[in-house]
Length: 245
Ligand SMILES: [Zn+2]
Image 1: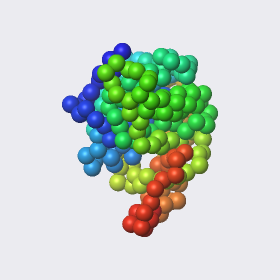
Image 2 (image 1 turned 90 degrees about the vertical axis):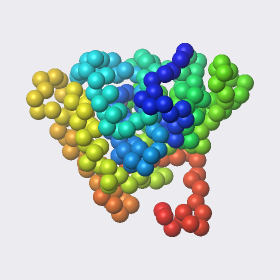
Image 3 (image 1 turned 180 degrees about the horizontal axis):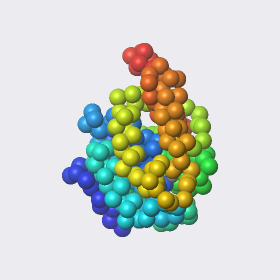
């Protein structure tokens, strides 16, 4: 299976954000992505499902919303693996889909949802990505002419449930732009004109929480807004970087 959906001609990425549903990456890592692309890093998003079980909106509308958000984020690449929404299985076919995208775009780092959450898709996606990340480095697992490759680390992002924190990314400069990106997903988030059923993320309360959450994590590191991440692996510091944390 060929995975081709480049937004630019870039062949290698600095970062891939894996997400169970279109808009997960924006909600949880939007400020981080904007900060990285602002300094010229090549960032891609790989959505595992089309979000076909979403209560609000439809696939055509969601695709349009995702394309607009991708432009604002200045992504180098975005693709959708079209795994079944509500049924993200850890099987050979799904692992190969993820291994292929890692081997083709060779990101230095990948991001994934933290493996404990209220939504089972986020938990299953997390475990699927973690396994594929490991197996991508084994040369005896063949994927045509794509060579084995394992990124340096996986950083796990928070969804609806608090996570242990390894570091918090300062998104003070990009938080307002993150709100603009979230507004691209008009069918999913709070919209007083919408007649569609209310969901966990479409209520005014969730809208408030996006800002409260960013302020909460920002406060922990002495800045206005932040996004938290967890790493299973210890993070290296040295005499210079010690003073930056
Ligand atoms: Zn999701």
